[in-house]
Each structure stands twice: as C-alpha cells, then as structure tokens.
Image (cartoon, rainbow, N blue to C red; front, side, top):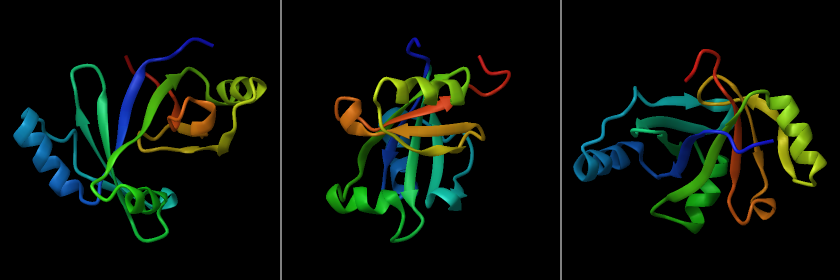
Length: 139
C-alpha cells in the first residue's frame, strides 16, 4: 500500500468556538461548514479548509469522550491525529493488521461520512493515525 492523500489533521480543543476564532485571527480562516455532533464517537467536529487539506477541530461531547482524556493531559488542546485516505477501507485494515499494526476497533463511519479506523500510535511512531476511505467522487 502506498501512502494516500493527507485528508486532515485532527486537533483536540476544549472549545471549537475559541479555536475557530484563533484560526480566523491568525490565518483568516473560516470553517468549512457548521460544527456538528458525532454522538457515536463522543465528539463535536468542525472542519477548517486549508489549500491542500483540512484541520478537524474536535471537542468532547462529555466526560466519557476519548477527547476528554486527551484534554486532561493537554488542557489547551493540541494535535490529536493525522488522517490519510485509502481507496478501500477493509483492504487497508487487512493490510495494516498483516503488517502487525494494532487497529483500534472495526471500521465505522467518520466525520466525512465514509468508513474510518485508527491505528495505535505505538505502531505509527507515536502518532495516532486515522485511515479513511476516500469519499466517492472526491478529488
């Protein structure tokens, strides 16, 4: 498998509104669309477009959110993960597992409406890595 397109960098934040204001002031950036909840993943999400990718702002939807634990260790927020695209999610999962990578759970629908899974950071040089099926008709 070859490295696919960088789709986005996930940034955990205690407040999407405050983070959006920071991106407006520092970069003149605007959100791709309104923030929305992903209750199945315990997060609220908002994307900010960049010329060649996106930044995914991720806010916890409660104390049990996986982002809440990240923010306990990093109260100001910070880079949470990187996301790369693949043409077919199940083939990618099988290939990563065949190489000994720990895939965290089964593929599920992510914020872009396509299947995703995560690879344990210990198997990716300390970086939590999201693998996302390329949206149909994209690029």
